[in-house]
Amino acid sequence: MLRQDFASWMGTIQERVESALDRLLPPADLIPQSLHESMRYSVLGGGKRVRPLLAFAAGEAVHAEAGRIERVACAVECIHAYSLVHDDLPCMDDDVLRRGKPTVHVQFGEATALLAGDSLQALAFQLITDVPLADRAEEQIEMVRLLAHACGSRGMAGGQAIDLDAVGKQLELPQLEHMHVHKTGALIRASVMLGAHCGAGTTQQLDAMDHYAKAVGLAFQVVDDILDCEAPTATLGKTAGKDAAQGKPTYVSLMGLQCARDFAQELRDRAVAALKPLGDDGRRLAELADFIVLRKF
Image (cartoon, rainbow, N blue to C red):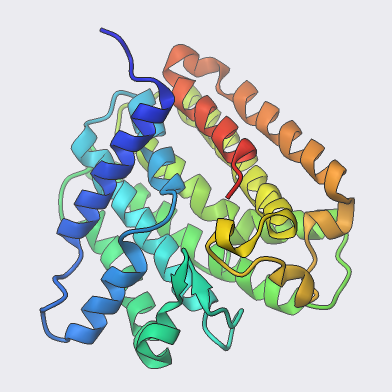
């Protein structure tokens, strides 16, 4: 049977995830309506769905059931959306544009935005606990642990705290990497590993995907820094050049534009090399590494 080309596969997964999120999010007319409307506003109809794509690629690499992968894909996207809602708040990055439309606090008010983020985080954990997603209960508990770790003080929230503290400071490269391993890389790693745990992967396969995820997660942030410097607001769907305007340390400010590009390519090479134990089953993950490094938005 012929395998879909990458663009077709990506489009199929994006459509599937959009449909599943629409089904799994609370209806907008369910009380409290404004909260549910804001949750749907923040999640649906935008974004590249990189984290769900990574979850599907990893799950497919170990021949996991598509229905299982779909649940974890929606869970990580809910976590990602919640993080964006909170990051955009005036007490954080104070941004007014996200995915080409007003941010949630601009559209619904700060209090509702805060509650929307809280509710999306709770929904993510509901999604990975209310149906069987692994063959053994211990495996599903490990999935919950992976997601909780990625969200908390030693993951995404901790990375954001370091980021806020770093404004106006000159970080060394290891410090910048430490920040982004947590702020951006933790959830990307969780996306890959949650997808992988939906199947019956070997220890060698799981280790390979873990090494891949760490490299591709950092590459994502390096490219994000490059795009913040190069791409216009209309292309990004969010305010361009804001990191520089706020005095935030980035890979571009620390390394220069060309060195940052070279570093992103080096990380892509590391990620793809890590997939060797997967053979052809790692093809989608390798294609996603190219997509992440070569993207223009």
